[in-house]
Every structure is written in C-alpha cells, then in structure tokens.
Length: 75
Image (tube, rainbow, N blue to C red; front, side, top):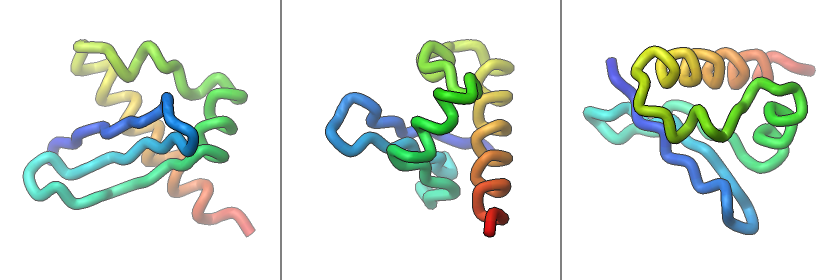
C-alpha cells in the first residue's frame, strides 16, 4: 500500500491528511492542535514534508500513523 501526504499548513486552519494513493481514501487526518503538538515535541519537521527521499517519507508516514493511533487511545 502506498500513501500520499496532503498537507495544507499555511492556511488559517491547517491540516494534514494521509491518503491511500490508489483509492484516494483518507487514512488519517491531523488538524491544527495535533500539528502544533507534533511540532512542539519535535516530531514533525516541515522540511521532511518536501523531501524526495523515499525512506524519509516512509518514516514520516509511519510516525504520523503512530501518533494518530496513540492520540485516539487517550482518555
């Protein structure tokens, strides 16, 4: 399965989505509060989003999925 990162970070209500490249299905959504938390923890480097390195992007997507799952488990 391959993914596409759809990030709109320079707008009043920024968000980042991870989409299934084949179907276009939204797999994960991070909105402003989550993006701020990730940046504050140092877990989101905006330069990585514009990388052409497959391993960098693969690790980024992996970390974003893990963050989403961890966030969903919070009480």
